[in-house]
Amino acid sequence: LWEDRVTFNKTLGLKIESFALPEPRVRFDMRPELVGHYLYGRLHGGVTSSVLDATGGFALMCAIADKHRDEPPEQVMLRFTRMGTIDLRIDFLRQGIGERFYAAARVTRLGGRIGSVQMTLTNETGLLIATGAASYVIS
Image (tube, rainbow, N blue to C red; front, top):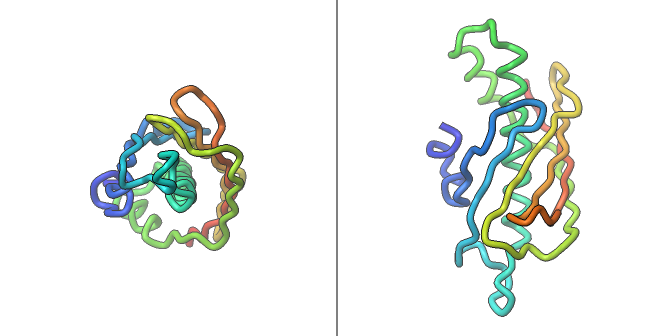
């Protein structure tokens, strides 16, 4: 659902690496469509931001599903439809150079209406490319 039905995630090429809490992970491969600087072949900053935002939302979905695991699946899915980003901060630490990238997110607060998440983006060598922090409305 998250990889194929969310069209933008599919466009970015996001694949779920792990659902495991406390830090779900996704990955994606570098492709020409994601390049921000044609001379250096580095990842576009908008891609970095979008991936970290999507990963933060994915981590919240995992945390919400875990918190409400006794509810019927339809009710949990309904909770996901109410989510939306309300604040996003990205710190670009290094150039986005690599063949494959990994994004991870950790929920720092899961309240009744707001969820907060911290995210990281690394390349295949483990080099930290960017970090992020975001808040999402969840109800």
